[in-house]
Structures are given as C-alpha cells and as structure tokens.
Image (tube, rainbow, N blue to C red):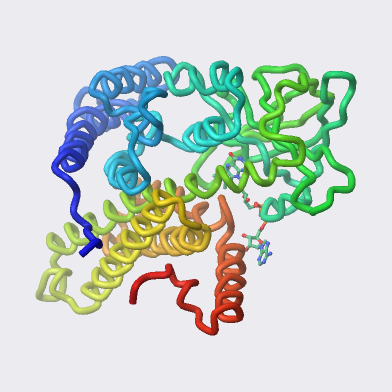
Length: 415
Ligand SMILES: Cc1cc2nc3c(=O)[nH]c(=O)nc-3n(C[C@H](O)[C@H](O)[C@H](O)COP(=O)(O)OP(=O)(O)OC[C@H]3O[C@@H](n4cnc5c(N)ncnc54)[C@H](O)[C@@H]3O)c2cc1C
C-alpha cells in the first residue's frame, strides 16, 4: 500500500520544533511589535526597534536550525521536499511574521528557487548566497500598470543592446519588497519579432539602488502601504553578464518560478484558513444567544462544516500537487487547481469566521480583519482565478480529446 499520509518520526519532530518556535518565540515577538502585550503598553514598534525584534527572531531561528526550509542543505537550507515543506510552511504561517523569520517568505523564496535553477555560478555566489544568509532582500519586477499582468506577452518595458550593456526603459508596479531589496529580477522585452509570443522577454539581475531605477511611490492598498512599489525605469544600464537565463527565456523563467511559489502561497494560506476556522469554532463555543450557544445552532454548524470540508480539500490538493513536484511529474494543472481552490476557500473561511464573530470580527481587536484584507489579493495575484480556470479547462478538454476521458486532468489519481 503506497499511499501514506503519515509523517516519519524525524519529520514529526521537525513539525513539533517549528510549532514550538512559532508559539514560544514568534507569537510573543509579534505581540511586542504590535504593542498588544503588557510590555508594549499599546504602542506598536516602528523603524529600527521593529526591525531589531525581527532580526533577533531570525537569529534565534537560524541557531535552532529552522531556516530556509525550501532550500537544499548546501545552501544552508533544511533540504526538504515539497510535501515536507507544506508541513513547515503551514506551521510557519500561523504567525504573520513566521515565514519571514524562517527566511521562506515571498518574493525571496520564489527568487531563491529561480536563482538556484537559472543563475550562473558567479550569479549564485553574488545574489543567492547573501539572500540565503539573510543579509539581503530581493524583488521580482514583472507587472506593469499599462498592460494586463495576466498576459506577459504584452510587457512593454523594453531593453536594447548597446555594446556589452543593455539599456532598459519602462514602468512597473506592485513590486513587492522593492524599497528594501538589494537586487531585482526584472523582466523586459528584448525581442521585436520572436518565433513564439512567449519568447519575447528576458530576465535581468539589477543591483539596487541603480541609476535609472526610480521608485515613484509605495502603493497604498486595502491592507495599507506595505511595500508594493511603482517603479519608473529610465535608461537603466545593465551589463550583459547580468542576464539571468538565456535571451528570450523570461517567460520560461517566470513559469518555473511561479509553480512552486504558487504552491508555497497555498501552504501559507492553509495556515491562515485554519486559524480562521479555529477562531470560528472557539467563538461559537463561547457566544450565547436565543437559548443556546452559537455552536449548537444549525446555521452556524453549516458555516463550520463547509469551512472544515474546504480546508480538508485544500490540504489534500496541496499535498498531492507537492507530491507531483517531488516526483518530477507534470504538476501544472494540480498547482493551478490548488491555487484557485485554496485562495477562494481562504476568502470564504475568513469571511464566515468574521460573520460568527459579529462586530468583534469586523474590529481590529482580532487578526481576522487584517487577514481578510490580505486574503483578497490571493484570488488574482500569481495568476487570477479566471486564468487558472481557463488553463484547467484547456487541459481537461485536451485530456478528453487525447484519451477519450478526462481522468488524467483530475490529478491522474488511481480512482
Ligand atoms: C499584493 C500584491 C503583490 C504583488 N506583487 C508583485 C510582485 O512582486 N511582482 C510583480 O511583478 N507583480 C506583483 N503583483 C501583481 C500581480 O502579479 C498582478 O496583479 C497579476 O498578475 C494580475 O495582473 P493585473 O493586476 O494587471 O490584472 P489584469 O491582468 O488586468 O487582470 C484583471 C482581471 O481581469 C480578468 N482577466 C484577465 N485576463 C483574463 C482572461 N484571459 N480571461 C478571463 N479573465 C481575465 C481577471 O478577473 C483578472 O483578475 C502583485 C499584486 C498584488 C495585489
């Protein structure tokens, strides 16, 4: 019997260690930063003070060996596969700062995968090594305000060659982490007339700050102004050796990056959804109305049951997609389905939890309001719902045409 959902004792021990670290170190640190503990006396920490607490937690995590769960051991990581990673990410993201403390947060985590796969040895030493050591931060610059981010063949930022340099002009936005990053992976159009529409873009490594890379603003969003920048690129010059991957391979590189990075988002969203469901149940066991506890009312039980079923499906989908990545099998459909399903479940589960909490859920006295603001972008960033649905439908129709059945489009499972 090959299907086995249990963890080995070694992995169970890692999971327990991560959970204990999150509970004993990160959650109290979070309380200090937010100013919600007795020490903080209601004053959130800002600037250097906030950063000091975060860095202190990072040092402790590294000393504890909970560091870079997604990277191989030779890069200082824990050398976990994607199934194992699911378990660590889902524990880490029980706290807002967890992934950052373990150095497995977006966009650095996706950039590390990209550099590991595409960078030359020199580029790895220069960019990947310090990122893995927690000495630098990075960003990924692809989306543009003028054209649909869902269709990278429309990218207008262009690069032309001038001797052994490239000159880049264009406009990017929603570039997470850009204001603190030491370097960017930038996608620009280099080919006027590519054989395939997808082969027009090339990736470049840009040291930051650089002349010609100009931050216009940090965009104010529904979860505040938390580090998504608008960037104007004006005659930005970069040496040919800064090309990442080959010429015209920007699309391939983006796709390679997005597969595991999307799934890592799902792993963290599962943690958030579970927190929301735990809170929903806890509140329903405390709140009394019209002769009984909320937990005893069928209307509330349906909210709980729907959320439990969706969370269970989310976990199975993520584990199966991770299993396919680990086995080197084609995982595109499974990751697409997981990304769509988990993002939507997350939004529904948090919304139901807010409903059960009533006014308290709408207040900022619980983390739910903040979680809901964050969850909204999950449905369109890293592939909008409709794009994933389009691709899933295309693959399902192709499976039927090729094999007379859609079975291979639903995970190729043995049932
Ligand atoms: C918090 C946050 C962080 C981000 N971080 C980064 C980052 O670090 N780097 C970066 O490069 N980008 C980043 N992005 C941008 C993100 O990747 C884009 O928002 C995403 O790719 C969608 O592109 P768009 O916003 O241009 O939407 P559009 O492509 O204009 O799409 C808008 C809507 O149109 C619909 N749509 C589009 N195409 C189709 C279609 N073919 N069929 C049916 N419906 C369709 C969908 O409903 C979609 O939601 C971030 C965004 C957010 C919100």
